[in-house]
Image 1 (tube, rainbow, N blue to C red):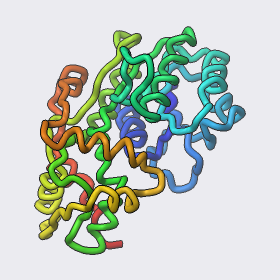
Image 2: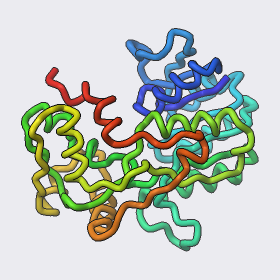
Image 3: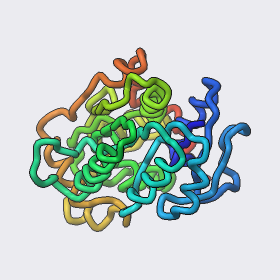
Image 4: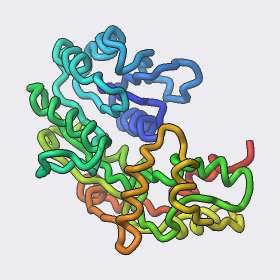
Length: 282
């Protein structure tokens, strides 16, 4: 049995779908079991990383776990439950901001993930770290609610029109995770993960406009205005600093998708076409 945390988030859902399609038994940890939209064969457990009792239930009979963590302080109880249940390996969605050579991590996001990585390494369990580069997490979309902006009109407002990112399609990240969850050769490995293209914010919105057949345009906000316009859960300083660093250089690109899965990564245009429905009026 493979346990997927955050199973109804875009990546978690893709992992569940791909594991199920490959014939693996899957358990999904989610806060709400109603209307999950997950495959009918999925064993759904209601719980939360902050709830040790639910973790103990979710871990029973599980061999490997995909871990997406946003809850501070969860790791000791999570790892204790995993060891008690006989879990062999954790595949962790970490951050590409983690710096293995630094005495102090560059910011809070890196420090949070670095600490979880440390605890995983010290746990005695097998582990695989999938370090998703910040620029690959498609942050302009969720930090500035681009779907909501597009449903409201043809102007997408955000900072740094020429800042480059390398967004990864959730299905590609999921495919890497599935390989790591099902193939023991990935134990003890750390993989940097990005999408296959370096594209500026303006270029991303132009490709989205093509997919939607809409005259969308990107309007650059001053930095301080952008800071206040960001969603409440977005790490504003971290994102703005990262975008500023990529104003005059391409975003980092890795070959991890193709190396691990044997297939090239999906383009941003493919992502825009696949998620077209998110931008349509409701």
